[in-house]
Length: 350
Ligand code: NAD
Image (cartoon, rainbow, N blue to C red; front, side, top):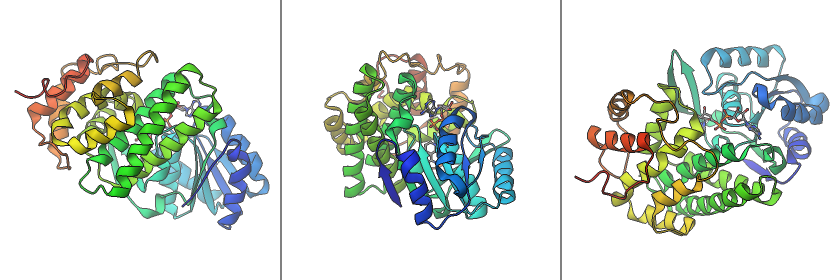
């Protein structure tokens, strides 16, 4: 994979990267709200653009994917450029999965999807994910200018989504020294950038550092197997329709408080990156003052759904540093539902 990161790169580097891959007719995909930015990329591609398809939706509903595959085939596209957040990149991945067309990604959030071979499709309310090298973008073009429009609240939740990838990569069973270094540096870069962006959302340098953090955190995600935190967010998003980045932001402090006793090295790395002793508290503080929901209750989850979500989250095997019990998971969910400051150990140890 080639990675380009510089202001203005969406317009200047995408045509070069397409040409480098020998592409002559690329379909540009995006979500409805990202159409203006995507049109700029399409215009920059000129004759190498086969069309613009602005129908990406959160969690890639299977009918949205099928329609996009049809558009790609009908337009005679020999490649695809996804411009936008994880939803637009997810649609690009669905096209790559079904057609084998090479994918270029131009991310406008910090979701990190562009760095992973993981695809997702939602059918009849259930989200399926899988890994396939065909969906890993051949080139990623990070353009800080493209993210200037990202509101502070969305910047913070998307940034904490990235930090969640790095945090779980640090205690993943398949972590490595390379992943650990990448993850720690990714968290350091992202946390610093988010603090700067809260004060000055149009600070191009901080926008660049946030994308650099997203790159590293996404790479750590792509290289490892995620644990309890990602499983909980998958259930809360896929089954209860909670918004992706906001859910990650609410849940992460409590998932980390649960796992902390079983993952001392990961917590030490996160503590260094965040310059804090109380890692779950420091993660929660990143979202303070940004107008971001602080609890699952605020995100609209019903209290009665906590037990259902807990049962679903323990229903499938996945690696986690601390043993997963239904009771323990319910405690994590209840704490996230209430949204009080996470208590290291004491909320979960009996
Ligand atoms: P998103 O792509 O849905 O974007 C959220 C909102 O922000 C949308 O309304 C979008 O139009 C808007 N937006 C995006 N960029 C903007 C910008 N620069 N300025 C203003 N508004 C902007 O959300 P997301 O959090 O980026 O991605 C979530 C999706 O990505 C989920 O479906 C999740 O499962 C998936 N994801 C996949 C992976 C993976 O490895 N496969 C990793 C992370 C996330």
